[in-house]
Length: 437
Ligand SMILES: [Zn+2]
Ligand SMILES: [Zn+2]
Image (cartoon, rainbow, N blue to C red):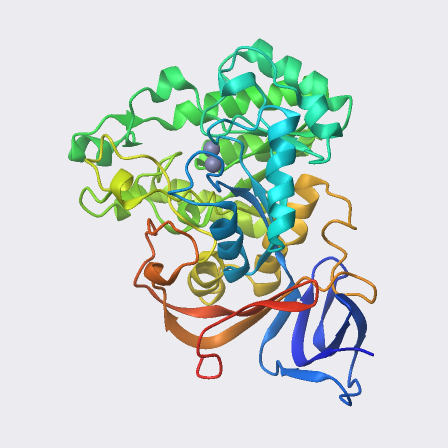
């Protein structure tokens, strides 16, 4: 007997190319029926008229800080933040303390996430031991472990040694895993705080040139072309990186890429005084870079939106600009910000935005559809998000489930809210005072 009926939502499911007003019945954690008007008898009814129902989002790039910096975030607070943001699955980056560079620690993190029973977790493993860039980490063992690590990255820093990156690509190609590149040439970015240019000069801060990213994007594209390795470029930020990505895709290089909301919605001109909430890596670039990213996101060259969720304690973030860590929190503001700033302005359509948060990241990761991404069809796990696309509200970082408060969009009046998130058929998150939007 189905337990829940989600009534009258506009269903947008990029996995099955569905778009229409439908009822969805959920039973025992799975989708039991999808149809025009389903029987209500004996079912709890969730009135979803005027709202949009989509598959739960997949975050391809988040920092959850456990183990080691539980004061900044824990698996629990991070995965709760995910549910608040509409995500039912999250990839966590391995730059924890200690880093996820061996099977035992990857398994411990995966087991802890399963025990929590919030959003699903896909741990990303390190490319190099200790993220030191000197020797390869236990990539095959992590892949074969119960954690089933299917993507590897030294995110937080770039792999400086081209020979090591080449060996990593050759190695993971043998078992079909993915390399995620944090493209940053450390010699070019050394000591930089913001984008190199007029703004860094005006602020009197050392700049991070666009070249620091572009040199490594070029290198990693060549290495992927040579080795046949699946390569994913994290947080692209410059127009020239986008141009190289476009050319590489045209040549058939097996590459995908992500853009973050902060790079899509802000440029270095938006940095407000010396407020460290705007300090991110890669830095906010020029308005022209932002426009190039937006265009590539709209036309399909960028495959996924990733928040690069990077929580920091107030204590750490409220230092002088030079000494504050890089990063913003993101998972709870992604949908409202992109919906308000790109969809409602006509720059991106809603279906494309949902693709960038669901089927796009699923294609990037190549996770089996049984783990994520069957969409809204009978038999699929009921991991869903119900979106309120009409209500106006104010983003308040103090209300985030994340421990991080470092959100550059705090205080913004937005439209588009996660009304509720369902995980395994249960309402795992419901917006406060729903009804009044
Ligand atoms: Zn990174
Ligand atoms: Zn990152």
